Image (tube, rainbow, N blue to C red; front, side):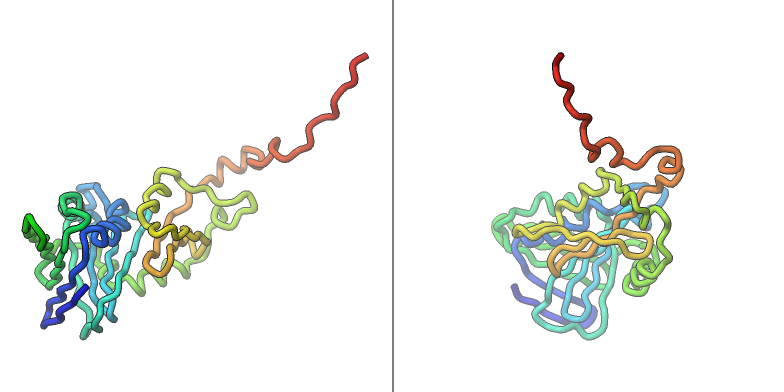
Length: 226
């Protein structure tokens, strides 16, 4: 992998497989609601020697990163349409040599190996707090936990949303989960950070017994035949 750093431009090379791992970890989390089009994007940021990708639809959030061989001067950030980016990633061959170029105007993806193909994605508007995602994430993790997060009966999570995090795991690394603020933090190695919002079952739990009821009780003693 090689990287060239120029004014308002970051260029880095990787394989198609690495591209799929990097962007594939966040694409399932991008919004699809046209009424909230500021969430239907993937935010890309080059800063501190890292290339970051972030996506969220409010129910889950994913943040992936990969190192750049050279530190960047300041931060370069932009947002591109998630649906278009996903379509491009699917067409890139895993063994292909790929070059990404991030500028203030958008993202270019070039497949350098045969066949040579170039894609251009212009910058799109994005949810403003996510363009400064570090303080925004820190604030989410500092919020007072809701009772549903710390209840003795455990944490309720939507399995459909949890399935989105499968693509974050690679090379056999496990996903680790812990509560923080009002969210569940999900990490994988040093390359992935995610958030999952718990389901609020406060009313249901007030009316229903503990989910463990009936599972761990001793069975009645066997009756001897007369």
